Length: 141
Image 1 (cartoon, rainbow, N blue to C red):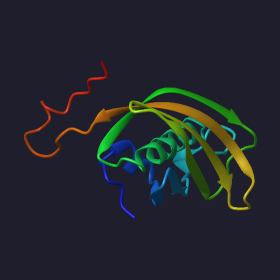
Image 2: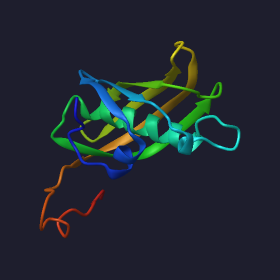
Image 3: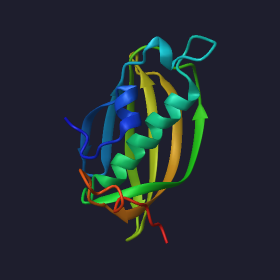
């Protein structure tokens, strides 16, 4: 399944969208050595990006024509993340302009590595492609 928006950082990390429907999203991540920290486990920044993206996709899954931006995120790390990881995002509640979500990262054995909650603001998607960079500016007010 392809991501519906071009996110260069997500492509660089190699995330793979597996589910995007009905307030839920699932993303697979097969970390490479360059995604590790000095303890040889997945860097917390990579894990937080994975949680951010899966929660945003859970929010957008009920209204894919809209974009969303992160307003707030809280992350708890339970155990080191190693090997192939799967992130699950769930939309808990939404208003016309806001989404409240949670996300989880599990390892290949199904053990919980990290949990997050996030708040996102829905924003109109903007045109993309050649000649649209000047139009593609984010307005959250």
